[in-house]
Length: 130
Image 1 (cartoon, rainbow, N blue to C red):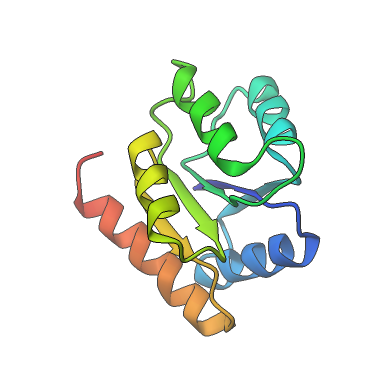
Image 2 (image 1 turned 90 degrees about the vertical axis):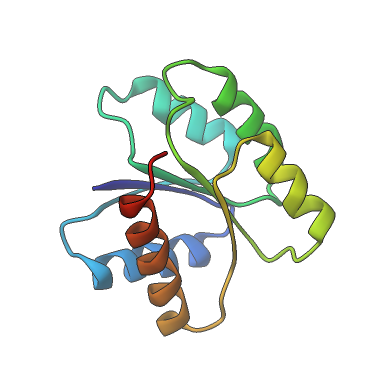
């Protein structure tokens, strides 16, 4: 499995990738520091990620703008995108779903909670048709 984490906070990216390695050491964790970096990375890759976890609050191109672009590119549109943010604003969460996100994960403060949340997302998506 290949997972892309798009987040401008380097510590949050490391925390996220550590959790993925704890779930399954064979998961490849790709990272990008902004929406622009994510689009550039995806443009160059022949093997696309199985999931994209996208922070909302980033400079230059925020997560919602990046989500719109990702969903407008036919090659990238099928990739499941999970918003991964500290935001708890229900209007913002609803907007992300309308833009095409399949889930919204509020950044947890504990490593164990992140592992549990990610495991649940992966298990649910395996059981559900996309």
